[in-house]
Image (cartoon, rainbow, N blue to C red; front, side, top):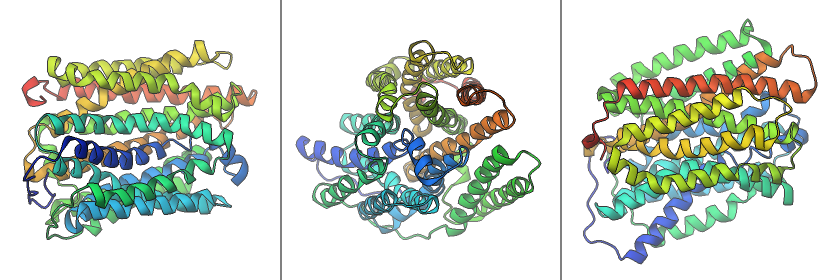
Length: 477
């Protein structure tokens, strides 16, 4: 893999022993899994966090958004840090920062403290994620072993997110919501100690940090998410919401200008010149937009409508986790036989079906009748969708662009989840602001409206994939 600046990594001189490769993969995947788990591990704990720290129902989404905004907004800059300072060193720093901020979050006594810790976690994750993908490429010889490692790695974001739901329920019920954050401390320290022992450092590359691009891009996305959340609380005529949208438009326009002129941009716009890759990037942005929002509202429904404990709510997501884990084991063979496009469209169609069923959810629907079927469809749909999108984006990539392409992939994935959640929370807030009925009826009605918009987002992703991605198997083999 290469840096975005255009230099290539030194190839491996000899293939490491298989046992050492397994140890390398375990350490790297554990670091990335920790990041994926933390995107949802607090979901099941949200009602308990709301009660302890006094969040409003719409403001509660910032517990998730503070993390994913900082994570997604700084991912590309994190990749450049790894290129310039060394990726193992950057990964170790990111993991330790992630563990330290998890400790701060677990000790939070008010909402501002918790949100600051979650944002700092996102900074640590932004240093961690790009380096994990790059280190797999530089530590595994090209061929079947690297492909196997990349296959396992590709499944970790989705599997980690679903594991986080189960783990969060267990920790919240058996101990406290604080342990959903504190659990990262021993894991992070162990990974940081293991990295120098097993993982080879990458060469440093001369280059510059695109600070202006990182600042305008992250600030623009933060303003956009804030504006949507503000609309959910105060309506579309709110002055602060309109100011947020205007600021976001100006900052994101400035980001595009900065990236078009920067000598070493964190987001090279030329990556969008390939039709298949551009379609894949749109898909990787839109799919998490509905999925992360679904996790948020399903967590609230399971506890505040069905009356589940945090532990039972976490295990309610287990069928989705098992379906996802089972599906991803077969996806490499499906890709080899059919190509990426048919597998991708099948997965997206299942996600649309799941969201469409949740659109018709009623307060009287129990778990078996209302949630189990959509959860199974979501698990299979996510399992069939993300690996083909990764393959489409990274197919035929020039070695000098590989680092930038993979970093942009991860950035759009996490920013899509953040922006999608803010949009769905806005739909929920608009639908429930003047609603009448019991709390369970209001929550279910607002969530159903949000699921409907999530279905439309997934449908948009399917249409883009169907008409933009060409589907020639040799391009995504």
